[in-house]
Image (cartoon, rainbow, N blue to C red; front, side, top):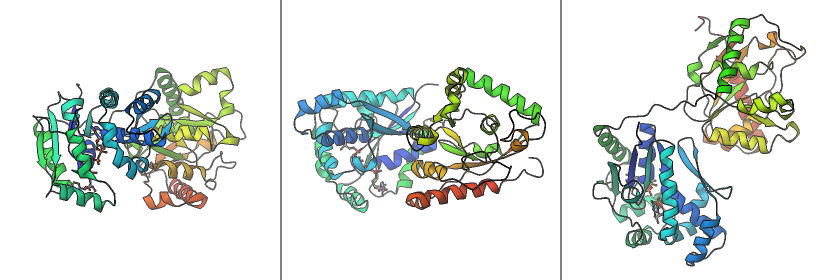
Length: 431
Ligand code: CDP
Ligand code: CDP
């Protein structure tokens, strides 16, 4: 299937970002805000106290900085020299006032345009900016140019509570020599002054549908051969030894990153959750488990991230959060350790911390029978009994719950997750 780019250009507050994000969601494409890259670099210039008017100094900074454009779900996120560039950094008043000066430098544009074009290897894109239809993807047949009167656009910015001299920025952006703001000759122009976001979005989607753009089904991550082999062998074992049954796996089929939160009774639990699903997922394991040479080799290939129990707050948790932010799924155990007696234990705060920091949904999972099969006090599993794995509906925590500060807020999230696990039962009709 060949690459599809949808270009949405226009002046400040014409509605590019809002429309592009919705169009991308509709078609399952990546949403890339090219302005964010110019803003991120401008923030970096200011952060490094480089004079924006000194183009030699700006270019020297450009060439010695490492610019990383990664994906967070279907949207791009920017890191420069390992620093996350947040939305707040990019929306600073100082950035608004300086970005057009920085974006007028041809060398800055050359570097950032190349990074924008790199996204073609990651999937189909809806990209918004000033020169997407003219410079970044000039060959795409899908180009839009959004417009609105300056008064309307200023009103929109004020309503957002943003201090932004957009007239000045527009003037600089349209009068610069390098890739100025202008509509491509073959772009469809839409005056959005008197349209709502929904109306503009519907119009763009309708045009694209008529032109034959089709939604992309979400891509499934693929299993490496080591993961696949271990998966097949474990699944066959669980089915033979314990007649493993999986219930409501369809509830786990949500796009993007998420945590599977399961009760913990046995070493069998991580592979039980893993083999209950059709796609590869990620795991956390005590770092001491990585000691034997076979495991040193095998565990990373089974997507397992080592956790230092005594130092659990630090690096491994950061890695695990990064993984879910990139759209991966990971199994976690809110109880922290395996149950000593088969009953559910109180929730620890850890899961709440992960959820509060990442904002991704949690899919509760209840495992029945793994305690009987392989409890803590046994060296080897029993080879009989019955195991059920039951998935619950994904829980998306509200902004309010996620923002609840400190340990108490995190503990509350963990407890709600644990309660959702406790509420799961094996369906009576065996579905
Ligand atoms: O959201 P808003 O329209 O205010 O601006 P933006 O898309 O975040 O872009 C910020 C600035 O980056 C613009 O004013 C341009 O100077 C520059 N830019 C550019 O030169 N070329 C692009 N493709 C995107 C943004
Ligand atoms: O990306 P760009 O600067 O072109 O605009 P935006 O950030 O998508 O939109 C700026 C603001 O205008 C947002 O608060 C939108 O909700 C609002 N807007 C609107 O009210 N009606 C439209 N037709 C387009 C945008």
